[in-house]
Length: 230
Image 1 (tube, rainbow, N blue to C red):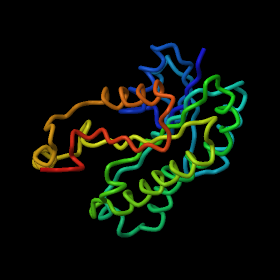
Image 2 (image 1 turned 90 degrees about the horizontal axis):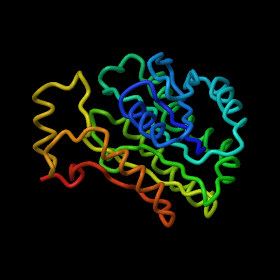
Image 3 (image 1 turned 120 degrees about the vertical axis):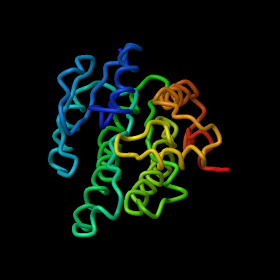
């Protein structure tokens, strides 16, 4: 049985990817801040992303696996800068912890297990189209997502050819509940394929990266053309 490790599996994209890969026959381990009792199809490991000790404890559990086929860095924190004018330092540290420190530690300590995968293992960084063209309202978020993107490129160089490392840059795949109607309309007007596509296109991107063994160091935009705009 193949093994997948995904961060941020309690909701939205992480939950979707975990369920799809589990249905494919993967044994899925989910690193999550909050255990979801309804997700019986995966093994959940509670992690405080802000604590290196908590992350290392989870890593030791994962290192008990003989090999790991797939690692997906999905966990994310997405909030506007203006909400954190009074706690900028702690907010920035939280962004760094989830977008950069957590993936760096997982890559470093799980790489030997991923390299054991027959035919080569795969690491996928879920970044953002904002990592290349930042939104000033989310400048702190964007800068750490850019760091995650750069970390992917370093890892692709460091772990080749045994491990392939790529990123997926999502666009407006699924709006958050707090998005207003006007915000949604503005985004759609700036997107060439003006529709809320859902999580399936991201899963299809993961499948492409799994299946194509000659791809590493790639930043795959799945954004309906939003990064180009109109």
